[in-house]
Length: 81
Image: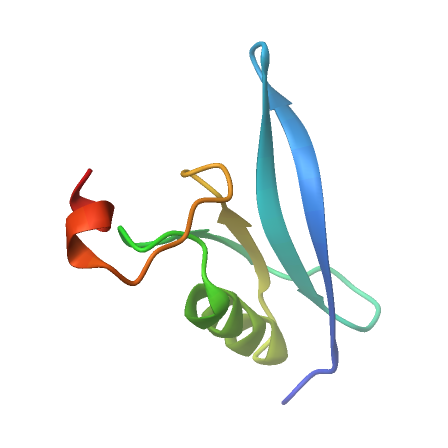
């Protein structure tokens, strides 16, 4: 079954830090299994968000944490830093 989805950016506390994440959920009643999506060294980019969306369309809640605090790159040298 393919679901319509809801997406949003969220902030949550981790110790004294505020961390951002992308949350995408299937629409509908009931409970859904959840997955934590960890991005690669490029950061939380459009491709990672599209993968989280694809998981939600299949019936999973996808929580993609932004480990680089908004930094995204396509340059391998910058990603290496």
